[in-house]
Length: 207
Image 1 (cartoon, one colour):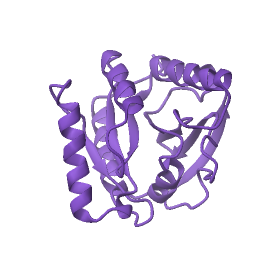
Image 2 (image 1 turned 60 degrees about the horizontal axis):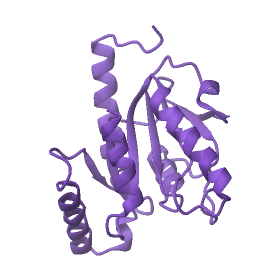
Image 3 (image 1 turned 45 degrees about the vertical axis):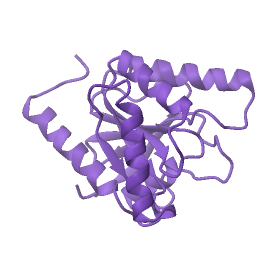
Image 4 (image 1 turned 90 degrees about the vertical axis):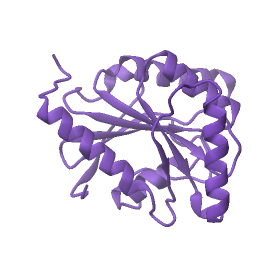
């Protein structure tokens, strides 16, 4: 997929305030220090589209971007280690949960995990909840440039083995590096293929 245009649309404090669900939507989520904004910017070839910060938890709203004028990319608040109060963290969790369960044009959720770490309980529990809620999702490993190739392959296998203890089938897996702009093209290829399928089958979200 060639990114011709990518523009910020709006930030929403609740899912009901999101743009009208007239186009397919793909959301990105992960722990608050996983490099989500950097990956989005690399994929969109736009260094300042999604706001990056040295402070975990910078994204506190649902941020929508319109890509190629025919699909939405959504940047969701991070979960986990953000330095925020417990009450605010609960607000984030409610915001995320309500968006995921109620946004009817959400086609796929990309769950980002740091390739450098072993499978984290918080990520595994979140993925289990997605499965139980029948939410389509993919796993995106970030920061692959921080490891040697052998370490990347090894950690991916560790993750696969951990998931196969409770999952019959694995979701799609992507290995990415925002620094080297690697892996994002495969995610965009998946989005293009999915959008083509939706168009061919005349799928509508606003009925």
